[in-house]
Length: 399
Image (cartoon, rainbow, N blue to C red; front, side, top):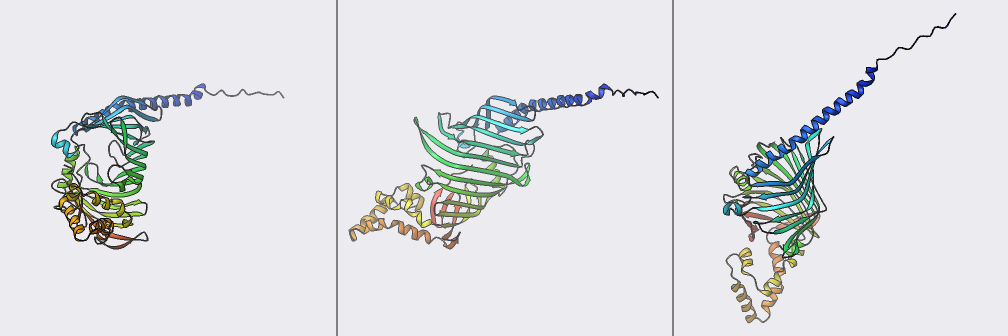
């Protein structure tokens, strides 16, 4: 019997090209989609800049480029700047020249398949110029980044983080430190409502190793802060100057609720909660209930004894004891010394003890984190700040 050999069937060659062709078509389609999305970046950015410019915030970019193909959109802005006009009560009233901030570079990244998440990185330094003058403030950091969820249609959450932040003021050719912080975080989210219909905003601010110079020796020492707030009364998120937004907030009875706040500096711990609004004059109104542990250790740092020894400035008396004149205080110490030699000096040297006793009289005893503390109100009356019955400061109007 002879062997019969059956020739194998030939498969059509076109089947071998199906997968490569499909991959090629998908690549061409994806490339077309990416380049279309990239072409829309400039149009979207220009539309946003035009909206902001109407509100007195002019953003500019010396050199803008788009990259990141094939899966990301990377928008790089070299020579970024923003000019702020009519953003404060003073600017709005006097039509003063704008405040200008300049930044080296901003890199914004979005995944093509998830354009609702934008991540940005900022390159230091940033400089701030006031009224068209030379830069007066410079800001540096080791790392700065932000993220926004929900753009461009409905922003839902936003965050910005700085590491090793330094703020310096130009003093001639020298730089003098103004503020420092090892770490700063600011988070915000839409808690209720919508961006176009009475949004309620929740914010969280955290500062680690922060300090402020040229304000008060107390603030020059490092402190940590954690503050959570709820802002109600906004009409919408449409771009507008800040004074106008503050007026709308006041007219709607809006306010900021300090849900919780905690500040620690060494052995000093302070917590506060309450509500702050705006008066008809555009100044802060409201009250915070504070509880402070370790306040007696802060009194010597206030420098009361030294201030009395050198003479009390009238501006200080106007702040803490309105109506009292410097000459009255000096006459009092002179009279004490004439009546009993050395009595005026003794009163000065015991000023810190008296101040501590006075502060203790402001509130009531409390316990904070297992430590003895005092609880008392911090009131804001049309911008005037009162610690109990004592006037301690004045805050300027917001519009």
